[in-house]
Image 1 (cartoon, one colour):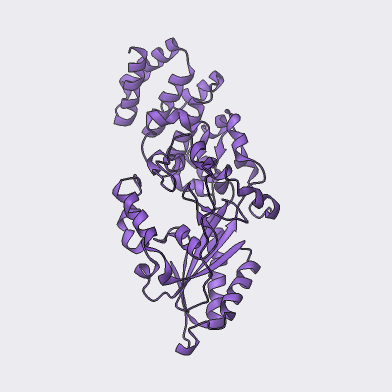
Image 2 (cartoon, one colour; image 1 turned 180 degrees about the vertical axis):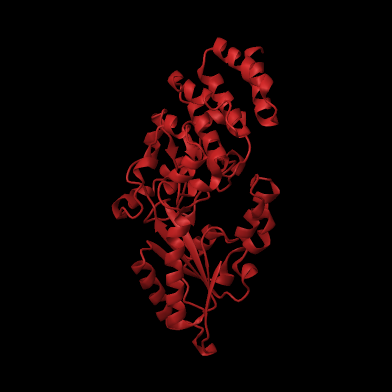
Length: 393
C-alpha cells in the first residue's frame, strides 16, 4: 500500500464538473491501461461482503489464511481507509495470442497460466498506478493510496461497481470489450470524483466456464471452492496435491486458464489486443523433462522477475512431477526416478506418485522396496504407503 499526499483546499476536494474524472481516464489510457472506471467508495454493495463471509464460513479459502485475517478490511473500501471518497479501478488486458487450451494436448510439455508467462504483473501495474496517482494529486490534490492485489481489497467487486466489467459465473471479472483477461489495480482517493455506472451481469444462461473446469471447483454459479481449483492447488497449496485431483490436473503446472479461455466474451478481446505482455519463449510450452531437473539455483535464475518464483522450487517441481505422472509417457520415468532422493520431501512424494503412474508394476514394486524403507518424512512415507496399497490391494 503506497500513499501520496499533497495539501489542497477543502473546496477543491470534489469533482463537480467531471473534469478530474476525465483527466484520470485520459492519463490512464496514456499509461497503457485498457480499462478505467470510477466509483464512490461508499457505493459498494453489501452483497460483496456477504459473499466473502459465506466463502470463508464454508472454508473454501483453504490455506489462504490472510483472507480471513483481514476480512474486516476487505469487505469495504472505507473499512480499509475511512477517508477514501472515490476508488479508481484500472484494467490491463493480458489476453494471449493463441488458445491456451491447445497446449493441454502436448502432454510432455508444461502448461503455464497466461498471466505468469511474462514479468510479475504486480511490478508492471504498480509503477503505472503510482504515476497515475501522482498525476491526480498534482492536478487535484488530496491523498491517494495505491493497491495491486496484495492488499485486502476486493478488486473484482470494485471493478464491477466502477463499470469496468462484471463478476462472471467463474467469479472472475468479465469485460464486454476485453473478455476475461484483465489485470486489475486500484487507486483510493480522498477526492470525490464523478463516478461511472456499475456494469450489469451479461452471463445470461451461459455456463461454459463452469462446465469446463476439470476439478469441478464451482459448487454453483458465482461460487468457487478454491480447495479444488488448480490455480490454488499449484500456487497456494503447500502440501501434497490431493490424490483424487492429481489426474485431473493434466499438464497444468502453474495456474489454470480453462474457465477464462472458454468465455464467449473473449471474441471481442481478439480484435483489440496488442502484444503488450507477450509470453517469454521459455515459458510458452517448456518441456517437462527440462523443468523437473531444475535445482534451486537454476529455478531462481530461470524464474527471476516471474510470479512463478514466489512459490519456490519445491512446489514447482511437485507440480511438474504431477504433470509427468499424467503424461502417459514411459520415457519420462527416468526424470521422475531422478527426483526420488531429492532433498525436498514434497518433491520425493510427487516423484513416487509419478513413477507409480508410468513404470511397470514390477518396476514400481522394486523401486518402492528400495526407497520406501529409507524414508523418514511423513509426506513421502504416506505416498509410499499409498503405492504399496495399489500394488497389493
